[in-house]
Image 1 (cartoon, helix red, strand yellow):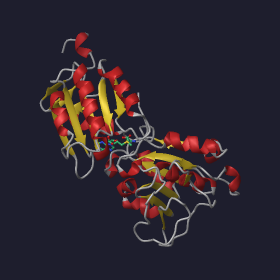
Image 2: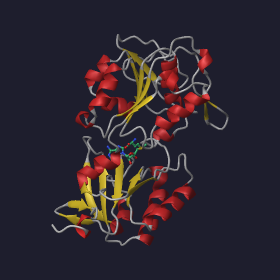
Image 3: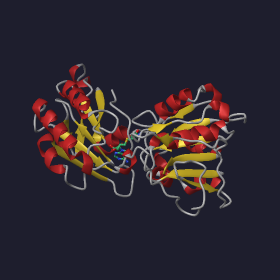
Image 4: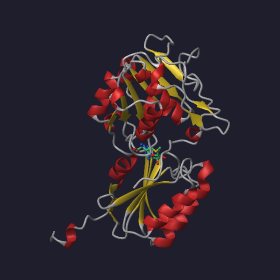
Length: 332
Ligand SMILES: C[S@@+](CC[C@H](N)C(=O)[O-])C[C@H]1O[C@@H](n2cnc3c(N)ncnc32)[C@H](O)[C@@H]1O
């Protein structure tokens, strides 16, 4: 069960109206997208691969709108792949994702994710398009427009494209443009989701039924998140909490802790992993009762995933273990 789609940082909750995405790295002189992201050609040039002149814009309420339709493109469409990079380090990427990226002519993504891609892949691409602080709708539309203009495009994100990420948005935008998924041979290339990467660092906390909940209220109202948390906290799930804390979401974190403590023993083991597979990785196992005080520490932020054990979860030799139930059937 997943609760919404969001991106990883405070900045990425920007709806794009005042996108503020600046041209990055070597080329500051262009972008065909109104979004303002940077396009970097492999020759150091600055052409845009997007064949249509329009991209997402914002209406008066700051919501992004899709403007161009498939009729604005004359070319034979290229491919569009949504590629999951996994947790961060190159060896955490699947071989399939690596191959997909090597074959892509254009790679599109949030700057943080583009920076996670190994150099040999980014150097092989004809163009990189990254938006440091831009909205996910405009970035996704840019990727689609580039594919409709005849380019083979990969839009990248951390973890898996189906977990609070852009795979669904890409399909929705293609449909709103009057296109079809088949038209751009749309495919999702899976990556290792944060819950699984973090679970691996903690031992074996996810071996039984698990539910994911995102605390981001960017797209889902907090009241809805609360009711979903209430629904699962009293059941026997391990709970993977994504997007746990940001300066704007202190209250969401505290509300989440309150709900969990209403339903679970304060001694319940909780695994906290910050930056799994990245240079600033930190791994801690604490008790649920300690969780509220950790919201204001460096351990819990928007690159942290929290795994809350179920009633059977225990800590053994510095590892979290959630039994699958074998012990009820077998002697060992
Ligand atoms: C927008 S979601 C993207 C999830 C991603 N698609 C996935 O499959 O993991 C961003 C959230 O994923 C979690 N996350 C992403 N990368 C992480 C990492 N390296 N370590 C721990 N948590 C991470 C954090 O909870 C973060 O707030």
